[in-house]
Image (cartoon, rainbow, N blue to C red; front, side, top):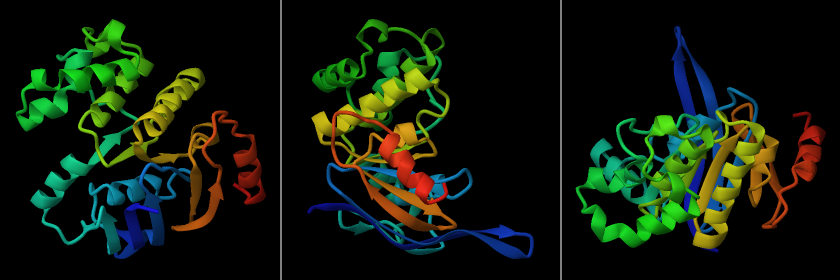
Length: 248
């Protein structure tokens, strides 16, 4: 199988007075191209820290992170930033939209930042806007959009450059139950229809049930790996049962 992301013995510690607090204590994770991987665990277990390290937003205290064969840890900040723009996309709990731009313009923001002419990417923009179900609101400003629509814009913006890996950090955290499931369905469709590789951090079993595989992070290490398989019905029941057996 084609390994797209490899984390090896990742550690991360933060100063705590005169001592250190170790959040990650030697995490190993392999992600193959086109896979949807969920990272679960209780609040404060290091899910977001792990995602930020895997995506090049943070640097580990120790270990290696390889994206498509490139070890990103020793890279300079500038080189890592360029690689991150080219190979990764991020979706967060906060939507982080530009309030003065329309939904369409927010999706197109990566092109504007890169200084690329937007009209040359009309087909790609139309594909993403349609996939995200935003055609009817593409001219609306963020304050005219629902929370679910704003997150769809954020996902579309992350998908537009066709990243090698999409990292989603608690993307349903600010959404109600029904809207959260709709957003997860969109992420799943981007994986199945576009072949998008996704790494998701969540505490929500309903969201994690959309993944092909779930790793459980606990006490700084991966405690368990649960394989769910690619399927059309995303029932969280089997996943919840396995988590309960782990006492989580």
